[in-house]
Length: 209
Image (cartoon, rainbow, N blue to C red; front, side, top):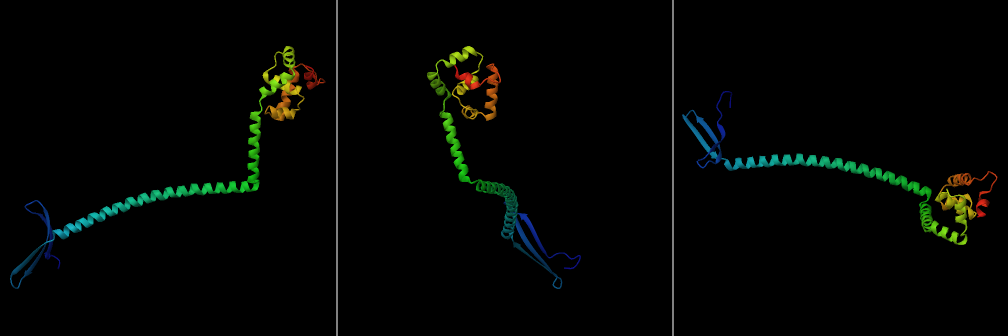
């Protein structure tokens, strides 16, 4: 069809008496030599509705794909973060495994068991029971000690009792759950509180009660 010529095919829509939208295709042909116009009409409503439905489904599918891609991107980020966390855990576990291999895990377990046993023994050891048994065999010790030194604290009385048993500083530290230095400091403070001179023997002084 040249420039300025009228098209000979038309697609259009219209509404019938029932208010339904219909689609049609018209073909127009001018026969100049016969001075005739040929016009044809084809109802393409079904075809057009199918095309509209397909286009609508195509658009819905496109939107679903966009939504799915967003969800996949979000899941990919989560999966990446999860993998990064797992990788970090693996690295830390590998470090711990190497450390355990170097330090011999079985030995560490044995030490932990021994420590647990020691703690159990410490819990079963009762200072009250020891003090009661000590007083049964030395009933005069506590009254005399407190008569001469009424300002002693319970901890100092306990230390005096242990020294009376002729225990050394290491043994006292173990029984009282102290360090060696703390137990030694406690002995020094006790000497001063008892008014002993440097040359006086602390243990000998307490054992005379």
